[in-house]
Amino acid sequence: MTTSMAATSCATRLASKLLGREGDADQTHALKELVAFHAQPAFIAPGPAFDAKKIMAGKSIYRIAGPSSNPWYQQGFNGMKGAAEKVGYHFSACRNEGQLSQYQQCMAEGVNQKATLIDLFAGPNPNDLASEINAAKSAGTLVAVSHNFGMDETVANVNANFTVDFGLAARLLADWVISKDVDAHVLVLVSDELPSTAVMRAEITCEFIKYGGSNIKYKFENVSIAQWSTGLKPAVEKGIAEDPNLSYIICIYDSMSEFVVPTIAAANMDGKIKVIGFNGTPFVLDMIRAGKVEMTIGECQEWTSYAISDAEMRLIAGMGAVKNMHIPFRIFNMDNAEDAGIPATYGKGYGDTFKADYAKLWGL
Image 1: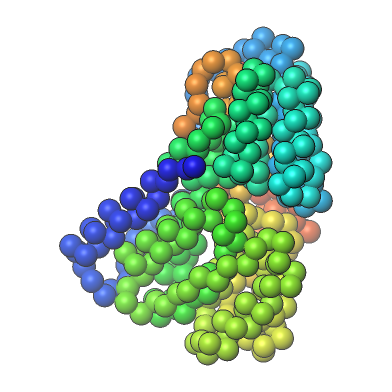
Image 2 (image 1 turned 180 degrees about the vertical axis):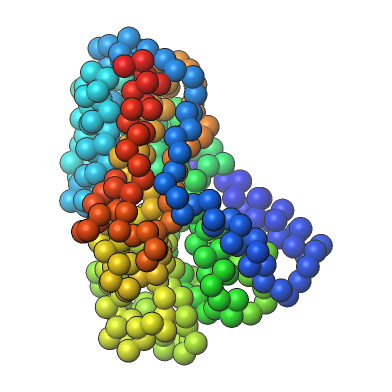
């Protein structure tokens, strides 16, 4: 079971709205929130420096992530492997295609390998693996979940929850729409099976209600990741048919754009319906340069991997769970999409000093 503060936070913010101004959109707020995210991000240390080589001598980390065939997950593996090679500890991962039975087998393999820590990354839900996690902990293995839940969520069974600020990403998506069109009609595409989606749903709703004014209209449509290739097209077609004034589609995970953009084009709605999303996937950045996607909130997968590696080494060292890994976002639109490369590549566009910053933090 997880306990989320997102709903409580949302209720508090909505209450303050009811006590204040009603009806008018607050574009000033939206623009103020967005402005800091257009430039390359700066490194913020998540804690004091430590001797990583000493702490990780003889230690190992075993990752269980979402589908191995997905290039986004492969980039995450490459990033954590790179961090492990710098420090000098063993890092490995379990190949799978996102099925619960495979996650269960992966947990058993992690225990058999006597991993110091098992990392459940962006997919495996600890709620579904309670018995396997208990077995791992009984064997002396730490279990952490990463990139899967909200900042304020307490996740049962695991030793730590390491996350990016999904709530912030969600608010920025809503703020972008508010800043561009106070009369927008918005379709928000989500995948509810991912725990992070609940936080993003709540924060998009809060931001629209508190700052979007009375004229912005929005609805959510759930399509599971496994159904993206077949389910997103009819979801968008339905949205267009039900709302002739549809002007924005928020792809809560921007890889959805692969199926959303062609559907908009087939409906002859190019330029009329704008697409935005979260993640900063390279092909989406290429779509921005081509004028097919308006904006994505990018997250550097390699930076994220280093941040998670840092947090998990600190946990292994007995330094406690890092509350905020300070994983940064950057807004990419037509003005700066070229910073990510032509064609765009993973990790480009965020600056290249963070590796040296972490190396210094780790005493390398």
